[in-house]
Length: 112
Image (cartoon, rainbow, N blue to C red; front, top):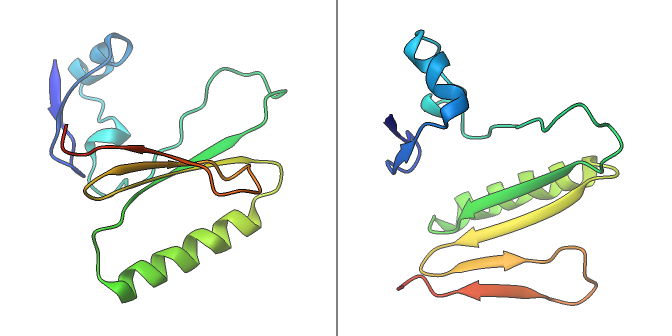
């Protein structure tokens, strides 16, 4: 069973654990275009440190980029005790290590 991502139009497989829900008519949050951010809960163990990963397409106008950047900074400042991840992409994909006091990032060539 496949579905088209409403955000990027990529064709994806529905996981086996969700296929039964879909065949019963349940609409998964991933299927709805209004859901640009989805939170997944993994088990009931509260001893893990929560994390949040921002995935950002940087191909936008400067004023849009600055507004988005401000919103992300405000969100990060409001989170206490979270691990924060940042992935940005345009022509290339950048994985940013925000836990380091030094600029550390991994770059993945987007032409491959």
